[in-house]
Image (tube, rainbow, N blue to C red; front, side, top):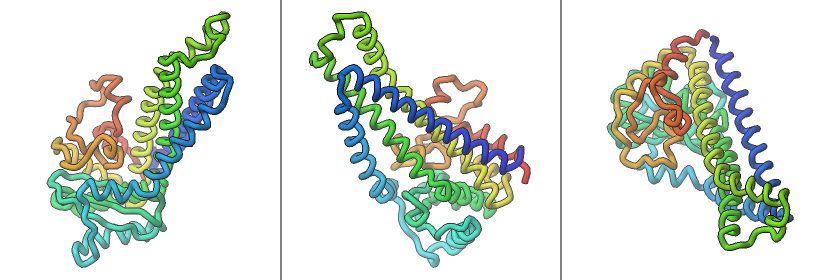
Length: 303
């Protein structure tokens, strides 16, 4: 499999998942609107989700960098790191992102920012201490690919869709609890069926939405791996870096489940398992694909 084939495949799969996600939102919205004979609940849910996501979209990167303990640096603070980021930004045709260092012994890194002009890349001191130059280039190229692929924006759109589903489902369940259902839902079989489907959808939709959100996150990681390897023209650099990172299972002090998907590897200190022995539910509830699988794919790639 070539680097270009892998990148194209991951792009198609990501957008296919998003397409199915949108269909679910439309289906849930139609079902509840039909049940209440009103689109008011749908409009209200979308408005709430948009407000919440807009705040996250425009100020989320500052909050993430602050809570992670990241410290912005200049070129004089770490010339080698700065040159690697600068050279890869030029190669990728992207603006120079802000560079941050997180004083953490566990090797990891992440990128954030709503677009390339407002991007930041952060690496831990542990990453700088344990990787050689080619491996560090592989990690930075991976994060630069997240920036170039607008992954933060994609995941924000997905978060909006998840928010819409969650708000709609919550409103529906609360209205049923307090008896604000349709008057005719017990008077005919059609109404009973719609009521039953609506209740089932309200319970399952947020769970399904979260699973799809995690699946998209995993696909974007595969895409960043492939695009990062294209930037450096050396897949083994990133593969070797991931191999070293996987040996450290300690959690990052300031990482949380809300920001875990941003990092190149799971920052919560969960033990890496063999992907063949990992349970089905563990796989679909993970923010990252198994590192062993990512390494295997990278080593099989050809330029």
